[in-house]
Amino acid sequence: MQNVDAINSGIPAIPKDNYLTNGFSLKSWLLTKDHKRIAIMYLITISMFFMAGGLYASAIRLELLTPETDLLTSATYNKVFTQHGILMIFFFLIPSIPAVLGNFLLPIMIGAKDLALPRINLLSLYIYWIGGALTVFALLQGGVDTGWTFYTPYSTTFSNSYVMAVGLGIFINGFSSILTGLNFIVTVHTMRAPGMTWFRLPLFVWAQYATSLVMILGTPVIAITVLLLAIERTVGVGIFDPAIGGDPILFQHLFWFYSHPAVYIMILPGMGVISELISNFSRKKIFGYEFIAFSSIAIAVFGFLVWGHHMFVSGQSIYAGMVFSFLTMVVAVPSAIKMFNWTATLYKGSISYDTPMLYAIGFMGLFLIGGLTGLFLGAIGLTVHLTDTYFVVAHFHYVMVGGQVIAYLGGIHYWWPKMTGRMYSEFWGKISAMLVFIGFNLTFFPQFIVGYQGMPRRYASYPAEFQVLNIFSTAGASVLGVGLVMPVIYLGASLINGKPAGDNPWMLPGLEWRTSSPPPTENFEKTPVVTWEAYEFGEESGLDLDGARRRDQVSTVV
Image (cartoon, rainbow, N blue to C red; front, side, top):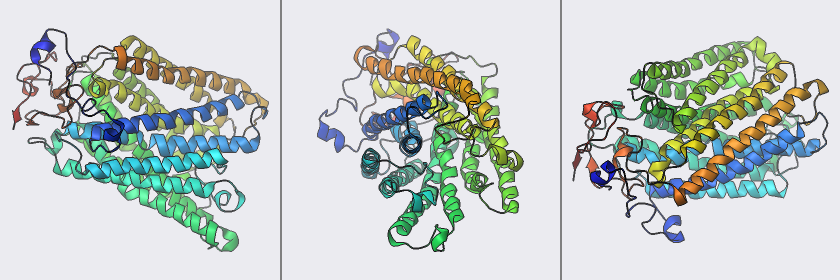
């Protein structure tokens, strides 16, 4: 641990005994059971998948710069947008926050030495690698052209691409999510520090807990769906293909029963990150803690009840459509509660506009647009017109990129000093955050307009009247790309020449800020005893009202 005198002198030092330096061989990393090292390996791998998915996105935007198919053929374009979706959704969006930030922080935030099942945690990483390697191999061999949803009959009859190899990779990868979710639930139930009651848990932990429930309950459904698809393709049993007695609507029901809850696997952890950022950079206790905590559980529950709103034009009954439309409006309520409470927390707060806070404010604006446009798609009459247009593409990206990716970047910047012991350049961090926000809106807001005007998605060519707005989208994608590449540069540079961060660079009350930066292998020298409420900035937390650090800030027992 750093000593208090060093902090008070303004010259913090990076501790010599930390998880990064304790055995620095390749073998010690590959066989580690330390949740922090596993999180770092996830971070590296997930970043590689994100960059690969980003390259596919660049190819899509370059092709759509002109109305004609002058860069990619229609067949190649089908593969490019399919592979972009597969890599981004299954290998970045779903695992990124739980596998990286959740793995690293959840034990520390509840005062535990590690996750409850450390060997299973390492196994989940290996499974992720195996599933990802198989998927990438299949994409390099020839790719998939069915769309990331693998809709039948494309995936069962018309496609001769590597559907089954990619499906097997996703099937394997699903077990990584299940094991991670199981590990988080067991850890939260059994390994909380003395005094860490359920209503003293950070909201990030509540979000991870709710997400873990969805992982465990929903992921087996997509695994079974992929297995049934394999049986039909290899054995010829009529499950989804109507030509041999199957039902293609059954595939959509099974797929979306998982894939809509998967949206909340992607966004719920991001909401947990934003709750941390809003409260801590406002220097104010979160407004309505219990409501935000229970809204995470409500989102997880209601997420299993709305899958049919993806199928309004698929042939399901109008009565089922009406029920799903109503439930879609209901599921917006817990998200609205979070938005209201975040806004109330900001009101009269002592706000500091550091880089993580810029991402949090950007999240609120972008997610608000994504959520409100979701109501358009939940209304049966409107969605008949908007389905399969670029309006859907814009809505999805405002929720996923404007939501989850922005939250992930905010979380990485927020906890980077704790993970590495180094501070990054605030100047370049703020520039990057603004470029991401501006570039994102320039990329995807025009797609609401062209979608409402009727431009269909998943086509390499389009009517010439849509070209101007597509040029705006491609230009915006260039700005967005620059904003996303910049953190790789300045965060990487901080590892070499970044200033030592100190234990608590943001001066915050959470448990993760009461251990050294980077943390020791077992997180705490002594087991912490929690005697303060969550997001407590008063004397009870060991911090004065201005956030200044006190010598007696940590109560410990052997």
